Length: 75
Image (spheres, rainbow, N blue to C red):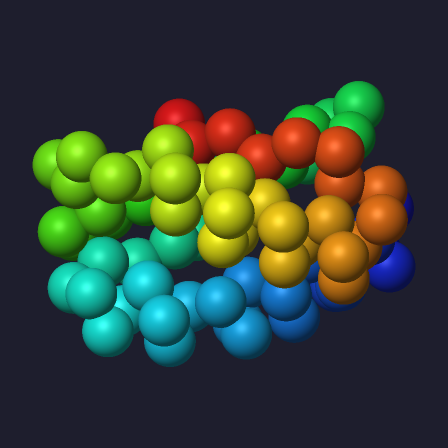
């Protein structure tokens, strides 16, 4: 699990600058059964396009970098 967590953290660090450019942030919450849970903060919490961002941006990148991730959920 520590290898997966390290790869998830590295992937989030690649994504974080783009999220921060829009006034938000993303943080690891947990990973279980292929589902990665992340916390979004700042401008991301009220953004109407968050589902598109999660699916087309965050989830796509994470799934390509960490194949064990099947889905990403914002909590």
